[in-house]
Length: 201
Image (tube, rainbow, N blue to C red; front, side, top):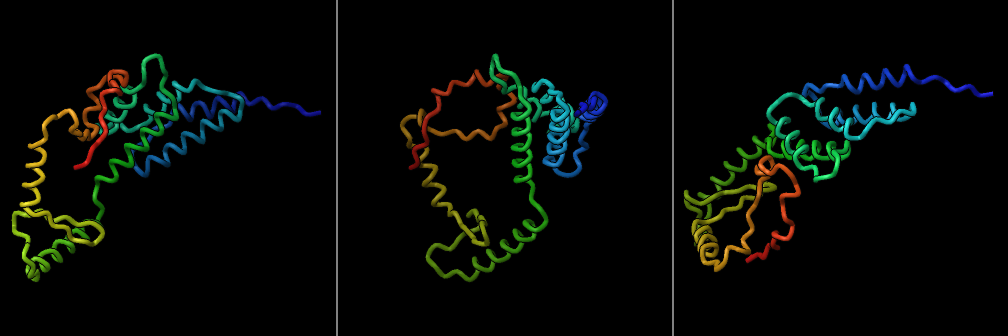
């Protein structure tokens, strides 16, 4: 005959490790989230299921006490729709998204070296160009995949003139960097019927 094992002590140990989990910011946030998910799955395997909102709060509480993560927590908790509850999966997805966005904005050493090499290459090309439209000092030089792009002042002026000549500002697309998210206390404040499609020139 099979005898069931009392998993109460093991479940308590896993529960305590979940509550005591604290990430110091070292390493990747993905590793921290994987560790939390593993502990939660272990607790579930012992037949104990915690409230999903409590797990989400525990995850947010385990993040470092820095300005970056305080803003992330404020964004996550402020965007929960009315009459809905925060879930662990939503919190996890938002944290990963913020981590990816913050990593994409930080240049690494190889890209800085590449940028210096591209700038040197651009200066050589500026001196060697013999076409009619030679970039001047006031032109913007951009780099992408080892290709030098130059935007002339004339092109910038034409673009500005096009924007100014727009009859109505109703169809203008305003790019939101996401910084305003912390000023919107609730997602239900945004009316989806006010969004307009982008019509390129």
